[in-house]
Length: 193
Image 1 (cartoon, rainbow, N blue to C red):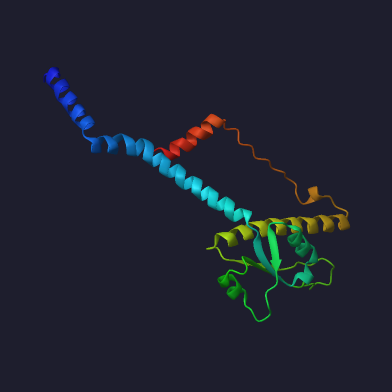
Image 2 (image 1 turned 45 degrees about the vertical axis):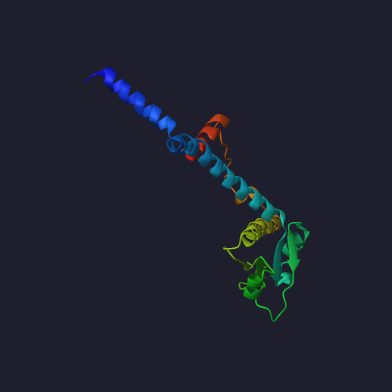
């Protein structure tokens, strides 16, 4: 085994690879430049599309709004939600398919079966999980329904003379303590390979 011969053969192979443009492009340009540009480009345009969809208002139809007028008022006051009425003979599915609405809410009358003043109310929320605008509407309405639920709970606790801490014995708080350098390194570690 002669090290001069090994060095000579290695040098010839490297110079041959560098002279060949196709090899140079496939070894350096594509992995180091094209793939990161491709991934960042896809992420950027996905982000732009999502921002555009979230900027548009969600079209929501409500049936039985008289049973939860406070919720309907909250929906009406939200600038990202447009309330519309669908006609009696028009089906919700038909309105979804035609693109007239992105979400349908059906509120039923409170069922007071045990004679007490406290009763539960059923709210059926229909959305199309294959439509991005319907998913955005679902997130917006879910937040409003949760706020509505918390207001009802707060009011019932005040009527009973109890504090909100009575039903929430544990409060949790999550903090991400990772430094920015490690977050960036983690992201690059997932993208670059």
